[in-house]
Length: 405
Image 1 (cartoon, rainbow, N blue to C red):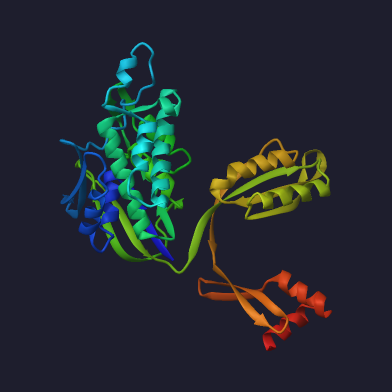
Image 2: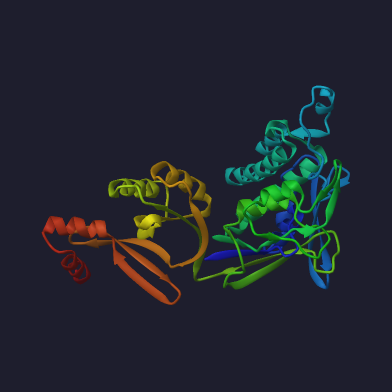
């Protein structure tokens, strides 16, 4: 399995992620030419070698017109809502709304998959700014120079992710820095409100480094692309890229990207649990059916003793983290519980494939699982049951006949 690990021990910004991923490609210069060929209005990409704390990497710059990018220029204080007292302010050419941004993205010569990623990432930034400023997303306006910088960074990272085509992206806990950041509205705490909003539910931490290490654009890119957040997995590393930031700190100011392979599979799952003591067996069975139909990975029950010596049932649901809200809604809809508990678990799974075997009784699906030094195989129960009924045989006899055929 092809895997990408992003070490965000010094945070993340769009330009740093672009540079780190660029170093993973066999021909970074050719890809840079491809980025410039997009003809994003007034935007020009360039790269240079940079050294931080003795480590050599790449720094990518985005020039918008005659202005070189500032990784924070589009982040703090450049959004505002429509104000009837100053209607002319919002028709001036140096501000862009979401409609104009979406239109400019729609015109880029990129694949629909990449375009969808770009729109989704920019949407995360817009939602964060909308929440922070307390205005609807359509009323948010971005400084034009900062907007094109953000579009350039986001498009570059989305194209690079598409080019790398990895199976899993693991991101370390994100170092956000500490202290305060100055913006047009005043002084804000680190992480800045928009960044903090985007990173909700994601492991992050501060530290002794004074300054803003993670920008909203960087946070949105991590949130969109990460398969999971955690420690570096067991992997055979093939290439390593260092994307350098502009500022100098005591620690190397970079994002490190590690591309490699792993024979094993691991991911995170949400365990949702609730206890009930006033549901019938039929009602619990129906709830389990609806949870499975809704996308649960597993649903099971355990008999438990509850308060007042009442026998009850523990209902446990395993699901993908992105499905937990849906599963919670189903639990509240189809059970009598008034509270659901969540626990995040790391699971290690075997790689699974399904193949079709031709037998004297027709096609039979065979499931194969491998990894961690073991290989297992079993026939699909539904296929065995069909043959057993048709031939008036036991399941065990059907398996023996298939294996000997």
